[in-house]
Length: 450
Ligand code: PFF
Image (cartoon, rainbow, N blue to C red):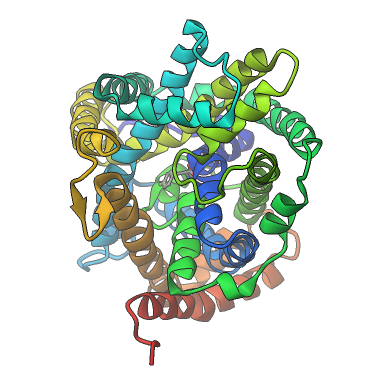
């Protein structure tokens, strides 16, 4: 007898899971640091533009593919277009998910290191420089870096292996609003520090002179990373979805939440950066150095920092679950018996692949690939090359390969003004998204530098 496929128990369950996948390190940790190193306000502007005009249409395309096929990331393409090379899109997605989780778990591990520091009382320090020093020393230490990464991966494997992540996503109903409130408190404190004007204008006033081909490819890559699109994770998640949920409503909620959390993170961080005399170009340590320093300026600062870290960890884990789930879904083919074994093997391989990234801030600091550390290379390869390539082909697949009637049906279910929404989407996915990705790519390899 064919086994019944698992499904989300409700519409809300799906939205929470998909939003849980999208919102994580991308909006909270990565966005502020790459905005900081790529021009601030101008980066924010381009990122929002790409998210709305390119990322969101591709998110909808992944939803339509996943729900119509009701299959994992590779089988979905096989089912919809048998005998073609399109399933390679799913395979590329598996590779990019593997690489992303390998370095994602390193940063997840840093959260554990900070929780440990709180318990040891190591964060009772005064100046921003001291936070900087503590952060650098922590991530340079191979035992802490690899240990944190290991704990993060074990937790991810444990949850995905038992297949209970869908239950956990229900907790985001409380955790996400709590994270939001935490950010509001942080922003209030950050904005009441002395001399915050410079930080606000750095973040909110675009200086378009700061844009160049590098900034633009980072903004494009980040718009995919932050929405979890380009690697068929959202194909997998929507394959567990029943027929009457409105895909465009779900996508709108996810996109808005993602942009709002990114804005909140930026507003909490940048005013404080300038006020405390730090540099916005700090790099991956930006959040880990600035936020503890802001909490330090508050009554019960360490209690708030602890709460923030737990919420941040939760948001990070729900994204990690989706990255592991896509691979596990492919290799366990809905057979619950195989699921645990596949999850452990895959998870351990990802952990091992991530160890060089974890060590790239310390013992492997001087090992570089094309002028980048191992960690940055993994991030660049996955976020700025594989995700955009995946996204480009998903756009072309939906726009030129799938029957229009199938898409029209998927995207108009339970959707007000469905026809109009569909017409706009079809235009964006056929013309704007592919053209934008191709132009940004050509620009990044110097095609337009005369
Ligand atoms: N969207 C996640 C974040 O912003 O933290 C990262 C991510 C998860 C990227 C899942 C890609 C993905 F498939």
